[in-house]
Amino acid sequence: MEENGVEIERLQRELVDSKLLDTDKISRSRIAMVYNVPEHFIGNNQSSYSSQEQLNMEFLTYNLVPTVNQYEAELNKKTLSRAEKAKGYRYKFNIASLLRADTQARGQFYQIMRRGGAYSANDVRRFEDLQPINKTGMDDYHISGDLYPIDMDPTLRKTTSSKSVAENG
Image (cartoon, rainbow, N blue to C red; front, side):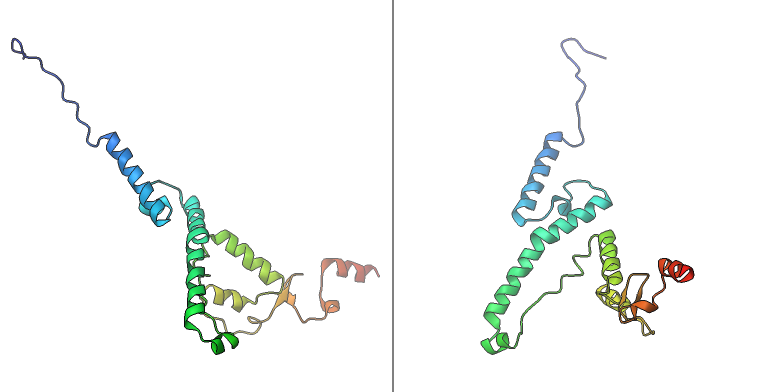
């Protein structure tokens, strides 16, 4: 129903103006830059869980670790006496649990260290903040071949190649 001399125009309504969203995104980017935090910490972008884990690792490596190192240096310099420093006292923040962001790499690292005789099973449990298990062998160090005690005589180790040599010899 139009009246003479009156034009009816359709209202153009958008729930949220796209320019407002762009401005909001720029503001979040600037906030992240000022505080040196990744944009995903303040919800500025969407990322999958696997990439989120990598982004968290980058934050720890490039932001948190240098900051913690600065705190350690300042505390060591300004709060310890010469005598305490001579005795080897120092401040050291334990950020190992924070650096456990990449679960796959952590598992591979523990496996390599365990099979190479550097860590016992209980060592790995302690690093993961788990209680040690009080059973025989849990504090023993093993080497691969497949996981013999490190102090075992190599001639007593059984492998498929030594069996075939012994059987043929």
